[in-house]
Image: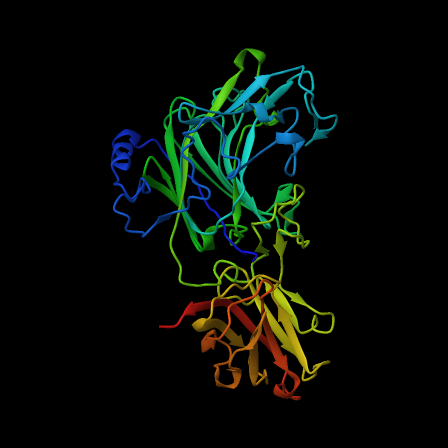
Length: 480
């Protein structure tokens, strides 16, 4: 049976505040496993996500967890920022560290095209470097990595991308030839990017973003430090060496789209506007001691696939397409979306930046007193529900507009067919979000193609009313 996930990551960091003493405490955190450096008492109730966490203690990279750029000739999205190019031989695990090496290799078989206005391997800097990407994504939690930046004129980056969004945990450089206010050897630089189509800002030459810079008081390549962030739906708290240094709140961030799962990247590249590396600086390594991700448990059996309507449901048992850019809304085996047939499209849609209970999107049913079919419905993709037989409670947030005349909303599962008790919409308060709760007893476990459908029957729509009903945050939990 397909397993579906919708997970998201947020991360960042701050200043030089005494790593050694807190690191010792972390090493003695107990046999239950390591805990966030800033929460050694685990007041946050964190559980380690072992699918992405890695101590890098073996002799080679764990290919079950990480995609290595260039391995087998395969590259995900792009080959690196030209003139540098990712090369798999530069991903090295030794001495308990991951080392992403950068080398001067004019004889490397560089790609015969360019990226971002430069040619791969051009004579001024025929440089190979490295990148790894997590094969799993996650949503909300605490991320921590102990790293030391590359001492050459190469970036050392800890960042993440997902559907319509990007988070640069940090972009560091130990030897900048052309320093800027934002990127500096003694600053922590992080940013978020909004990759939604139509959100380009011509005056800045980029999509909407937010940025944070924190003075560190040390060169990022001079030694190891722990960089971390605690991410919730409405904020990110940044830490360095276990001490909080700053916070980004949702209401203060321009272009907050960090509502979807992100995959983790570690990489090094040339940024031409910061200067080119010299042959004498290389080889040089960006080193990662460990990366650890913690999350909080949930009793929502649909989570995180039905977190909201923010983006696709992910089928992480399928390979991620190598050309899957963040702004892509095309369905494939890896990502699928809520669906309607052509007759229902004028009634059901996912709406953005208007009415929502969480995130920035919600599901809307619109009507003007007419339905073209007996039932108008929207459905999740096949395999997006996986329940055992048992007693459950379904909850959702529902907001009817004033003037809407729809009496009932129906919910059913499809493999095997099982219709839940109808939701009485006439009992809800218009103009505000209502918590709807339905108890049901599922007699048979989900089949391989089980999914959820939401529908409105023609007989339950008044001919005089018009407007929208908004739905968000669907959950199913065990009923005691």
